[in-house]
Picture 1 (cartoon, rainbow, N blue to C red):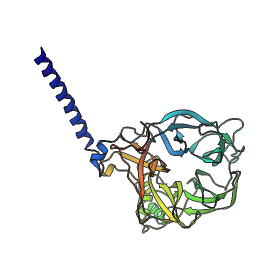
Picture 2 (picture 1 turned 120 degrees about the horizontal axis):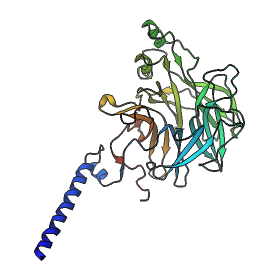
Picture 3 (picture 1 turned 45 degrees about the vertical axis):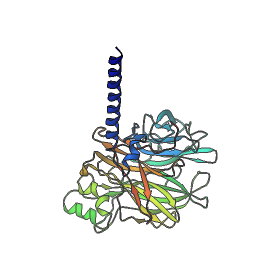
Picture 4 (picture 1 turned 30 degrees about the vertical axis):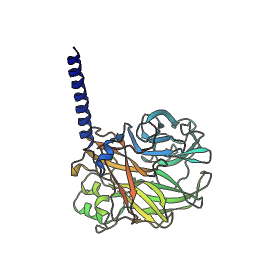
Length: 390
């Protein structure tokens, strides 16, 4: 009996060692320059289990992160998710509701971004304005809502949009400079905005489209209480005019693939690194596979901005054996836990189909100032917050 017990014990040990060896072997296949390190760390894989478009993450500086976006379980408004590690997210419910008797908005609640200034939380978002005397199909404006907590409830700062530039606008992004001044960046939508360029001429000659509509990114100073704007909008980014422009090919793919007669410059996100202002932006049809991200730089918040020569920095990878398309409308998280920058964006995979889901990948600023996003990825990577609690 004793000999039988020893043999059984040995077989159990061999089985455990064999399973451990198989687990280590599987980990060693992770896509990284430090395979041994990854095999001993906690990992995650994209996409995350959040079905959002236009994701934005607020670092609340108390160990919690809050994600806001388009959709995500909200009706006529916005919801939020909370996380302590940027990967595992808990649904916290709806935090803003529009389309009420007291609100200025009716529908198309898009692209919320939430910032903490002082003791208050401010949400900037896009929606359809109920004041629509000409019955415009796209009557989008930008609004501001305020709350005492990142989980709301957010209430409109006033019963009208932030301002009306005379054309429909979306995708608000706010930046506070070192001087304390606030700037609002937004996108004029393509609706009723035909633009003549070499691309539009090319498409017309091919008999594809009679005209090409474009969306452009503008910037303007914000009042410190967010009740309105100061001065006039400044045009900062637009699609290339000439075919020889280095960014013309990737920014025109929705047209050159005969997908749609529009070129987009939208979903901007601005930050400052040393003495340079960076503006990331998305181009091409948001509902198609060619949606991609580039960036431009400037020496002042309102430009002029120069587009980078290594654009796009984030795009579909199906041409190289991957499964991700429609990567765009990104924001950044500057982590105080591991001193890294993470690019948060939405995309689609073969498994998710048309549903937009959230991805998060590390971004680096190289010594020459160029941006590099290590994505889109779907293979296991180390958890972003290496020092986060178990």
